[in-house]
Length: 219
Image 1 (cartoon, rainbow, N blue to C red):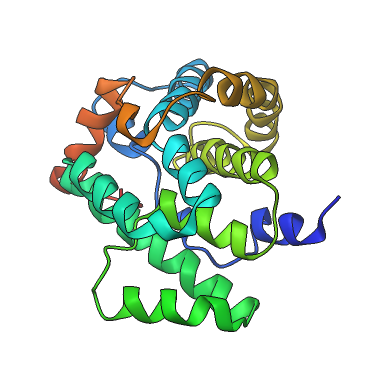
Image 2: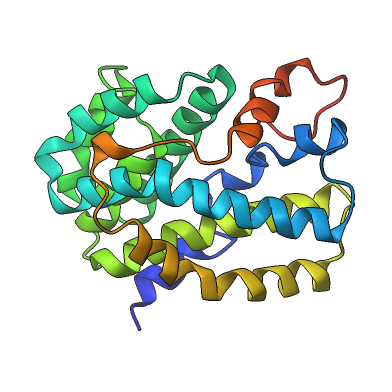
């Protein structure tokens, strides 16, 4: 096992992911998710959506670092939901900062400088693929890590929202884990031009996040 992967997906790694609920908070306040069963359904739909909307960008950036700028631009256009777009930028920049400081390598310096000067949006999915490539993580481990972190974000947010307890959240994560490789397999032939939203309700809930009366999360 690659200890770098363990470090990157550890909840202690300061990538900023726990500031976001992937739309769950808005779904709760709109009455769409109210209990453990609702969290499980939301997390499963979210996992599939990440596979179709973001995983192709992760894969493409990992396979060809030279295409990162184009993939970043494509992601910026695709994320027409302003809350989702803002969250993706924030998570991408937080991940880049955490990796650059935790794994100081000259190869990351130009990338970090470009994002800091706003020459690039710095979206999460393409940066995830590029950074894991630069750290020597294989493609399949990168894909698994991306979907694992995405699913964990939902279960962790559910705990903070008081929907489930810590043990139930771990049970949800256990149930989701066997679905990660099938999602990767299902999306293996998708190109960046094939990205699509498969759970439009999640996108709609997230787009209303800024209108919530009270908020724990940024998105």
